[in-house]
Image 1 (tube, rainbow, N blue to C red):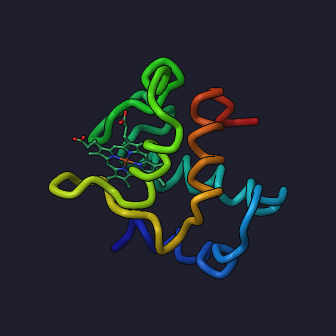
Image 2: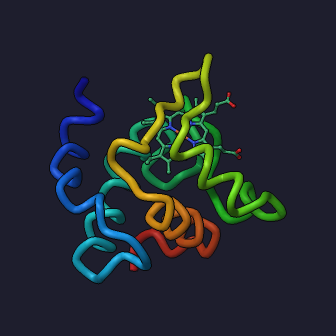
Length: 104
Ligand code: HEC
């Protein structure tokens, strides 16, 4: 599956716990743009997937959104990312999306 091919490279680092380090944060940023962006739009405005802009995520529960990333949404194209991401990494990605800091 093409979407996961690039993300496979991240697998080795996925076992670590806690706040991702700088190198891993750079990888997660690429994952957001390339893999998540392929469905949610390069600028997260939405496409096949729902918009992930700060406005769209405001008021939603951080933990619940991280769980959506890890489990996916059965019956929709949203895949589970738990083979590639830890819970801390999913939380970090949501935090970053909520701050809109996609390209820092
Ligand atoms: C193959 C397409 C696809 C990919 C790749 C994908 N998503 Fe999704 N995502 C979806 C779809 C479709 C939905 C909406 C499902 C529904 O509720 O109908 C969704 C929903 C979500 C939601 C819930 C949004 C909300 O407001 O509740 C989050 C968060 C999310 N995706 C994050 C991500 C992240 C982070 C990535 C990358 C690690 C990612 N997605 C990759 C298709 C995708």
